[in-house]
Image (tube, rainbow, N blue to C red; front, side, top):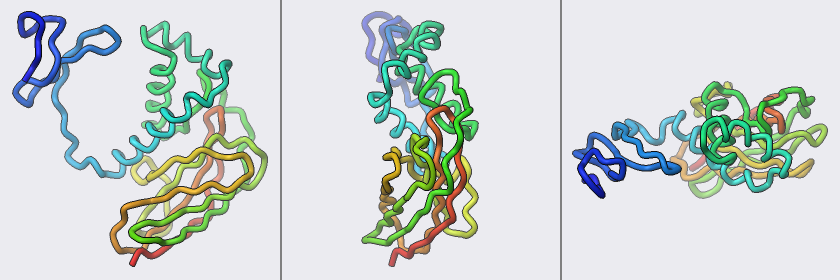
Length: 208
């Protein structure tokens, strides 16, 4: 039920009403919206959006002060924090299947690295995808795509994880929990300024 500090439609209402609408306050601004329940919270699109959200939120603190400062103009225009501007703009970019960027606007001029090499190894209800970069140190991270058919075609609907790059060192993505089946993977890097790099050759593993 809605919690209020005055009449029901007051500016201080919060909570849900009749499993139909939600009242809340964000950054001091009250709002009301329809209560939405995803029909399939584990759909490819939902998993990909959550994976990108997790990557972005975890790696804001690792940006330089100069990187973070580029989000201040967007934040001032929309009356929210630079962090919220960075999250919003990059999630919108991902919904258009563009890679994230450390700075606003995305320069999209970096020279992408070479083809990463991946090795998929099955475990207990899991598969570890080891990603070894190939080329210069320009990757910010790697997006991992999964299908149960081959060939893997990277898309908005089959991204299952995003991991931070570590220079020229290999990094791992653990895909779990998984049901018994054969899973095919492909990785694609992305630069600090918003460009996808070249797709890896795919690899597969079998969860028994």
